[in-house]
Figure 1 (cartoon, one colour):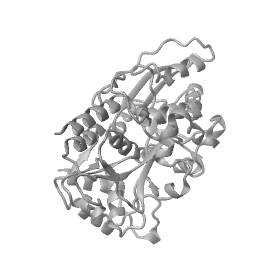
Figure 2: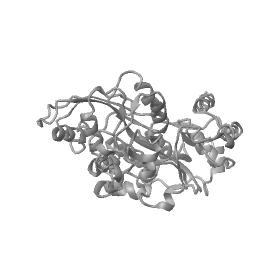
Figure 3: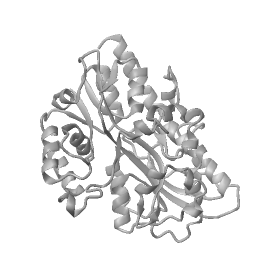
Length: 384
């Protein structure tokens, strides 16, 4: 491996280790504080007793790593501690996970007051009545959140989620190794990495081209998408973004499914990655949800108010390398992320098909659609 790629690997891995806020800088520091290992699951976070006296309530929180920082990684990234001081509510338990699969498993193990959920888990929690409707009137900045995102967790006129962070996928290729990257080459190559989730099937359906709605696939359309994925059995499926960085830096990857943040990170590390031009792509929104059996929702609503405000969303977007649902957060440290994802750019966002739990909004007249359980089974078979 040449010196440029060695440097790129060290630089990009260091940025990932310190939190994604560094992505906004042209030359990210390699000496910043280290984040917890991506494979470790932190224990419940000890927190100081709040000085405020508005409430003696506590909260049990389940979220993704980086979505609710408490200053343990960097004292500059601590919106949990500030929440406690300003509201008087104490975070008694803060459990974090890395993947959607871990989230779905953890949510069954104990009750939580507030939970961060993506599209599949959100639909499951609503159907199982594990979460309760949210009163938007009690969330002061609710109307500042993108309306399209609010509608994604609205069922029968009831709001079940408070949109927090969102992102979308794109494909990239190493232009120093391959010429004019395209979807045909990407899905045929054994030097490509796709995200390890059944929802990647929707991306394959878009690439295959015969399906109108990638989350509403008939059995035949699902078969065509799977045929495209099965074209190469030696493809890589990634969960840890460090594997992306290592793959491009060592030259073992030519193509990958990434988010705009990771593309920027690779480019800023000196790697010649370029985006593959596609007419449409897939994305997702993570929302905060309120547990079904919360005896006193006072502190839960204080938390929901906290995470919808521009300040908290600004911190979270910059740290997590995603876009905020509240466009008022697109200043200062989050500005680079908002630009990367095109917040407010209707044309760019019009290309994004945001995830729903398959079969989405299928109706009988559209033909029978395959359920997410079928997608998950086919995905498991693919990875064997």
